[in-house]
Length: 480
Image (tube, rainbow, N blue to C red; front, side, top):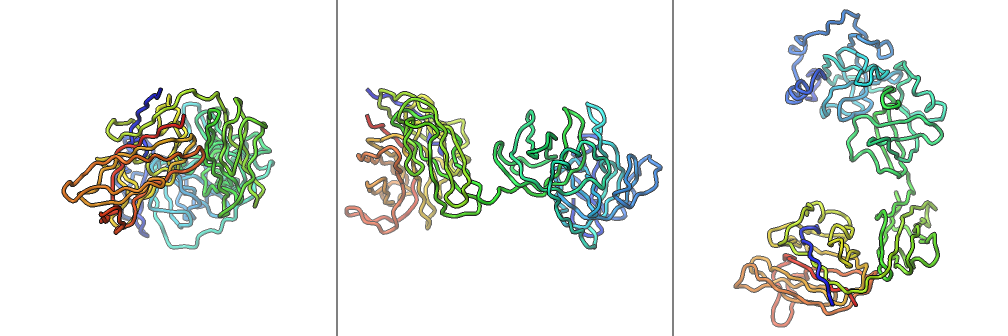
């Protein structure tokens, strides 16, 4: 008896001119919004900005900054965050907080900054460091940028961060870290120190992945005593160390007899080869990254680079085999909560992205979609002169595949699925629909490619005239 599982096909898938000052104030969220919409003021306008009530003398050196000081400093932008930038003269540094993204200056620019320094305070009281954040205006100017050489982080430096107060201690450091987490915030610990180090106002895409190793280069900009205390940094870079191995899937749950294909990549090395192993004998079999469940249990799979000697690991859990065959279908017409534009451009899709969780076809995934787009008739493959394709990794053995196609605007398109070829469309019907059945067996661990054939391909008495087509639905029948 066959069970049918239906899932949508849809689931497959500021001013920067010399002499022009930019301004910012962190007085309130309304003020921030207003300032964000007004990127710059002229030199004349800058002179009319209301000065701080502070009567402290104007400071021209970062090392001399104190709470409440009026500053007028020309120095180098050391790093840029989502809310401001680090200003450095090569000897001392300070964080210029603008409460908005900065697009008109970049690291290495020489800028003049005017404003007032103040102690950063919040709901937990004084946070222990001073930043330039009041009545700030800045502009790029002519000058020679300071040359900054990162200092290698040591245990002594990391341990001392909580006690650093002078701006001359706010230096550029570099260290190797494994990304951690404190509450909801990422951390960049130095392995030999207990000091908590957290990135400040950093884009999510630049934070790294928890549990993975990186080389971080960043400015220390102060110690925040809230939430147990942490060193605040503004990073200039976060890089994967050369030779680092990454397995592209983080884990897998298999049934006995099911397979999943793991792929590994090595940073800075192309066409690397790997030695694959399992921590527990007998739970799975492994052949060049294809892992097949053998007996019920859990094991850790390791991929070790034959070039760098470095490795990465994933956990695989194997459960008892299901005693039913199943049909699993992607259908573009039933709708889905998943964003198909995200799905179709991903490098690989896990089972949960493609199949109902109750489906035993859960280990069929799509990899390397080429020229594939979401469209009203399903997934559109190809451009007029560039062929598209879908490649499926089969983690289960399949006895039959049925694909519902829609031809493109009355053209004829030749298509191939596995070893089966068919002609789609006719000149009379702009969007002719056709079901192509592939009565071939595909073993677990193999791949199935769906692609149009080149223009001019002849099948029977018909010759193809176009590369484009729509994939409305695909039905996989699991081998009993």
